[in-house]
Image (cartoon, helix red, strand yellow):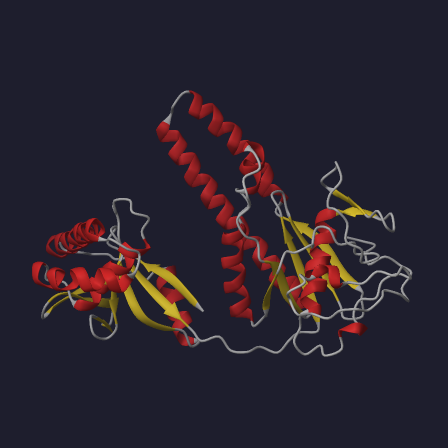
Length: 397
């Protein structure tokens, strides 16, 4: 597991500030020079062709040059304007602390190190708290804004599986959550994040108005406000989901959503604005901190599968918010049903479940649950559904 924390610098003398700016500017110049020399996307090809010349023409250390080469390889071929230069501990960087100040000493030039003072604010307190619980920091980075980025890492340990499962379905308008037990009982169902869609819809209307008058300054301010709002709400939603998982002793399962094919301007505008990747990053971090397993399941047929009889239909009807099964006739909210499917699929994929035929038998209809898996997944689930007359739905939200 990895994460990064920005540590703010303070009380920089004019000489230190100019030195850091000059170093950052030269790193950008070197990156653009290497970009012009790049002929393939392989790092070794670029390294063999340019390393010796870069070492002679610049005063950068070997580790800094190699890191800039990696940034160039990862770039999309566009001119690089900003770059964060990384320094490894202890060869090119070390830390020390006085009575009042914490310093990160960067190896700028051969035999010259520059101590950078760090402000002891909430970010620094968070950095220290992570170090105390076993996180390690072996790399620091210098940003163009003259801030220090601490890259922390910690080995992931195998966690015991919890009794229940919490499934999350992510869509453009809300996050649907369902908690189920191995005994086929739905413990809780709820929704989060409806206010994100409402707020972003108003922002889209505001943005269209500003674009019509070409107000670039206010458009930039609006974009920052939207980004900050979404990040804050995703953090709050994640904390609520973690509390539910702890309350019901549940692991968490989400879909492995991939890039959607283009299906028109309106579809792209709604689907591409789903903050799935940002939500996934925050959720992974929170689950790691709280000792909860996060299971990533394939999204195959989770929207087409009926949570009552187990049949797989053709998808949504004309009303996208409702799912109607053509086999048993059940009508249910599609998001709530999809979150149940994600939880059920994660239960079925558990490695310790040698006998999966005892899991999730629904109504007396002769329908199997293997429709949740692709033919090449290797799961042999041939059980007929029976013995349960009530639908797999929570009576209360």
